[in-house]
Length: 465
Image 1 (cartoon, rainbow, N blue to C red):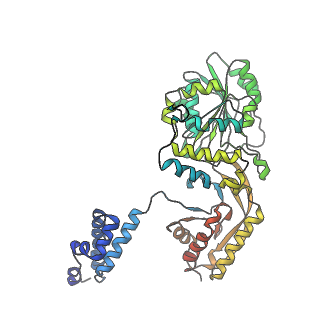
Image 2: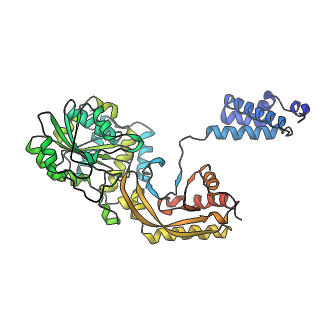
Image 3: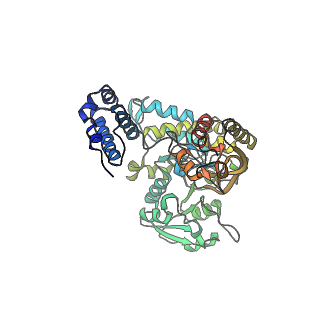
C-alpha cells in the first residue's frame, strides 16, 4: 500500500487544536491536561488511519474524536444499571437497591455535618452504635444490637470476642461457602477459635453436640445454609434445643442467619425464611445477618442478642476496624423505619418486587411488548420465573411474565445485542435462554420502564430482519 504523505502533512498540530474555539471549549470543561491527552490520542489514531489508507480528518472531526475520548474517560466506572435478569437480590449488580427515603437520608447526612458521635442532648461525645440500636431491638425483641460493615465481619468479631483460643461446635452440614469463595471454616479459624465438627452432612442430632462438649468449648454455633439445599434423608437440630443444651452448660448459642428476614416470606408464596426475632425467642444469645439481602438495606452486618454479650463484643479492638460510616447508618435507619411503619412491601424495592402480583408483572411486560411492536420490533411475552437470589431462599421461584425477543427475528446475534445493551450509557442487563433474549419486569424499577423501551428500540430496532 502506498502511503500518501500529503495526508499526514495535513494533520493539524496539537497547539492548533488546543487554541481553536473547540479546543478552548474542551479545556474549559475538562481541563487543559486532560484535553491535551485526548487530542494526542485522537491525532495518533488519525495517523494510524491514514497509514491504513484513510484521508486526513478535519480539525472539527479530530476535536469530536477528542471529546468522545474525554467522555469515555470521565464515565464513572461504578455506575447504575437496569437489572432485567429476574434475580431480585443480584449480588453481581449490588444486591438490594435502596428506597427513596434511604437515598434521601444518605444525601442529608453526607452533604454536611451530623451527630454521628455526638450527643446533642448532653453536648458530649456519643456513640455511632446508638443510632439504630433501639430501633433494631424494637423490631426484633433483642436486648442489644451492634452493626458492622458486613455479616462476615459480624461473625469474625463475635467469634474473636467469645471463642478465641477455645472450641466452637458446629454441624458439618452448616460449613457453608459464601460469595467470593469465603468459607465459614476459614472465617472461624481467622477468629482464633478451634472448629469442632459434629454430625454428618445430612443429619446432626442434639446428642452429637452434647457428645462434643468439653472444658474448652466456648459456644455452640448454628449457620443457616441460605445459599444451598439439602433434601431427602435429613435431620437437623433446632435453635431452641441447642439453646437448652448450651444454657444447661453455661454456654452461649450463636445463630448466623446469613440473609436475615424481618418479614414472613411464606406470605408471598415462598418458603419460610428464618427470622431474627424467631431465633432470639428460641433462646439464641447472639444472632447475626446481612443488611443488603432480605432486609433490603445497605451492606452491613447486624448483631443482635444479650446485652452483656454484645457489650463485650462492642469493646473488642476489631470493632473499630469493622464499624460503619455515617452514610451507611443513615441508609440503614431509613430502611428500618419502613419496617417500623409496616410499609416495607410498599417502600423497600426488593419487597415491592417480591410482593408484586403476577398479573401486575404481566401487565408491564405486555405494555413493553406493545410499545416495541409499535416500533417494528417483534417482541412477545412468555411465562417465566423470577428468583430471590443473593444467597437467600435457594431454589425458590416466583411466577413472572417475561419480555422475549427471538433470535430468528433479528439480524444480529443475541449475544451481540445483549452486549450493546450492556454498553449503553445506562446499561441494561438481560439474559439469554434457548435462542431468546429475555427481560423480567419484576426486577426493573418502574421508573426505569421508559429507559428499557428506549434501549431496546435503539439496539434491537436496527437489527430487525
